[in-house]
Length: 219
Length: 219
DNA sequence: ACCCAATCTAGACGTTGTCAAGATGCGCGC
DNA sequence: GCGCGCATCTTGACAACGTCTAGATTGGGT
Image (cartoon, rainbow over all chains, first blue to last red; front, side):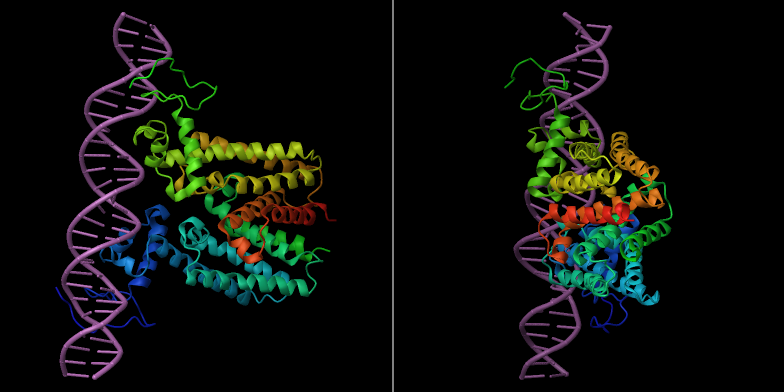
C-alpha cells in the first residue's frame, strides 16, 4: 500500500492531489479549503473536525497537529477571510479608478457587501467571537490589515474636508456599521423578508450610494 | 418521594419553584429562561439540551416534548427575543416623548442597539439563520411584530416629507443596517478594537444621532 | 370514577471533540 | 550517504451530545 517517494515539501507551488500515505504534504491548506467547501455545501453546523478530516482522507486526529482544536481551525479560517476581504476591497478601489474619498468609500462599501455575499462561508465565521480565539496571532494581524484601509481612507477624507466637520471616528463607525449590518441582515434572510427585495447587489449599491450621498457629497 | 397534589395547570400566574416529581407544570418557560441564563453565564457554545434539562432538574429527554429538537428550542428563544425587542423599541419611543419622525427614529435606533447589548443572549441567536427554523409559526409572527413599528415609522416620515424624496425602503434599510451593524460589530469586539471606544451607549448615541442628522434633519 | 393524552423518565445508539500512545518518514547534521 | 530527531499522521479510548424508542406517571375531561 506504500506508494512512492518524490515527497515534496509544502512550498508555495501547486497543492492539490498530492498525497502520500503518511505525511500529506499540504494538510493545513487542504483542511482550510475543506472547511469552506463544507460550509458552502451544508452549512456551518456541519463543520466538524472529523468530517473535515474524512474529506481530506486523513485520520480524525490529524487536524489537531495543525490547529490546536476546533476553535483554532475556525480561527485560521476566519483569518483567511479577513485577508481576502482586505484584498477584495483593495481590488475594488483600484478597478473602479476611484479617486475622490467619496468614490473610494463607495467602492469599498460595495466591495464589503459583495465579499460578504460571495464568501458567506468566511463571512459567517469572521465575526463570531464565541467560536474564535481572538488572541491568535495570525487572526489579529489579518483583522488589522483588513481595516487599515478603511481607517486610512476615512482619515484622508477628513483631512481633505469631505466630512463637513463630522468626527472621523463616528463617520468610520457609521459607514462600517452600515455595510456590515446590511450584509448581516441580508445573509440572515430578514432583509429580504422585510423589504421584499431580491437583488442583493442592486440593493447594496442603492444603500451605499444613499449613505455616501447624504454624508459626504451633500452640502 | 412523592410530594403532593395541588397540581396547577400552567396558567398565566406565577411560575417559579413549582415542581412535582412528574409533570413540572411550567417546563416550557423554565427551559427558555434556562437557555438565557446559560448563554449569559457561559456562552452560546455551552447551550445543550442536556445541560438545560439538568439545570431544570428534569430528564435529558424532557425538553423534546416542548420543542421538537435543539433548533426548535433556540427558535422559541429567538422568538422571545423578537417580542422583547419590539417591546423595548415601543417603550423607548413612548418614554422619550418623541413626536417628530426624526425623534422617533432616533429613539428606536438607540433602543435597538441598547437591546442588543443588554440582551446579548437573545440578540446573539436571533439572526443566526442556520440555527433556527425560519418556518416556525411563533418565530415568523414575532419577527413580523418587531419590524412593523420600524416600517410604519419610516412610512410616516416619508409621507410627512422628512425624507427629501429619498426612497423610503432604502432609508429603512439604511437605518436598520446601521444600528444592526453597530450592535453586531460591538458584540463581536471588532468595533472597540478598531475605534478604541469603550462606552457602548455613548458611542451608539453618537452614531445614531449622526445618521438621523445627515439623513433627515439636514436641508 | 375512569381513562386518554399530555408529560416526563430510562436506556440506547451513533457522532462529536479531545487526549494519550505509538507508527512513519523527511531532512538536517555528520 | 546515512542515521536519527522531530514533525506529521494513526489508532484507540473516553465523556458528552442529540435524538429515538418504550414505558411510567398523572391531571382533567367525560
